[in-house]
Image 1 (cartoon, rainbow, N blue to C red):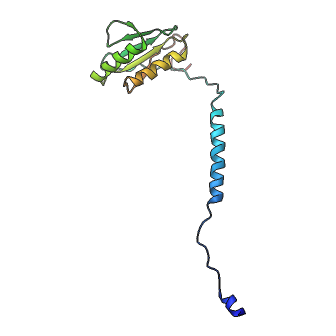
Image 2: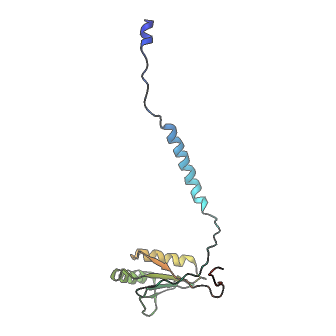
Image 3: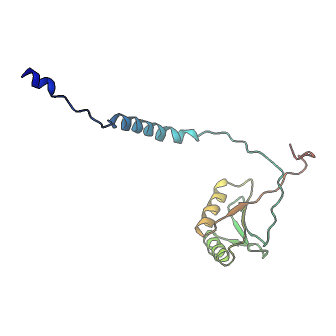
Amino acid sequence: MATLRRQKRYKLKSEINVVPYIDVMLVLLIIFMVTTPMMNSSVDVQLPQANAKSLQQKKDPVLVSVLQDGQLYLTLSGAKKELVDEDALKLKVGAFVRENPEVSVLVGGDERGAYGGVFKVLADLQQAGVAKVGLMGQPEQGKSTSNGRK
């Protein structure tokens, strides 16, 4: 009987125990979920300034101007500037861009105004079906040297 016990051998398992790997993955997932929102909370960013050349346009662009107090002005391809609200902006720009898909849409905001006004206009233009939006700016006067560096 002792010989029968010695002859009976256990089969080797060819399976990988993945439970420890799943535990490690879940712990890392929780760590990343907790730390990711904290990474961008207090970042001090100073954007570079440059003298960029203006882009050459084939057609007159659609201009949306956001004033300091949040008023919106719309200029459709060289037409007269008109005061509009958010709903009229969506309707007019959406219809104009559907007719002329190659036209550029540019947004200009007053530097003393709140960023929220420009952000709201960008969201409204996206809802109106505008695929590409540019931001307007003016080059700085008198601060550049001959090689373009400051």
